[in-house]
Amino acid sequence: MTTIADVMEKFHADHEMKPFISPERYLEAWLLDPKPVSKRNMELLRDGLLAGDIILLWRIHFGTFTTETWFPKYFEYSYGIHASEHLKALVEKGYTFIESAFDSLDHINATMKKAILKKKGVAGLSKMKAADLNQALAAHFTEEELAEQFTIRGYQLTDKGKQALKDYQAIIDRHPKKNI
Image (cartoon, rainbow, N blue to C red; front, side, top):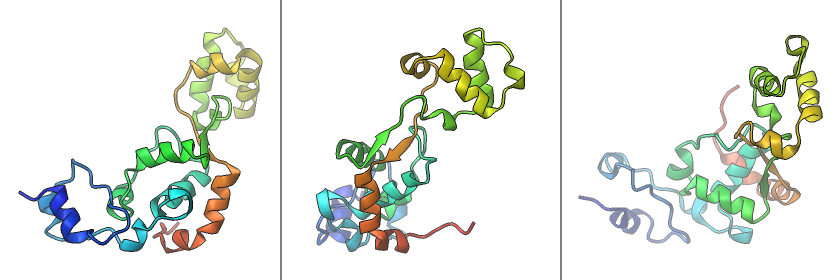
């Protein structure tokens, strides 16, 4: 039976940083058509970042990345990172931050906003548009009260995170994009 250590030795022995391989990865199936993480994706950048960290920052910059976003397998298979752990490190290093409840309102729908307001006894909800709902929430809730009503939070880049994207544009350029 092949182990993660066997894969590391065979495919990643000369990498500056060793890629993350999930203990859940079915190595025998992967070995039928192995695609090792490229060496350049495991080279340390400034502040201990890796190419996968830059792609995480790039995903965050679109404004749709939340605490409930799932991580595509390419973070492990192409970039060699444990994405959820690297996201925590990006927050700790000051590249991104978790938004407040009020700043995260764009991640919940109008039905949820109305349900929250209804708990406070706010009237006239059926006539309210999205902007009106946000104003009503601001008028009737403190940040602490609103934070108790829903759990999803968005991520935002800091200036440091935005600068990292500019500095490492070449990494983003070589990342496969969806055809929209």
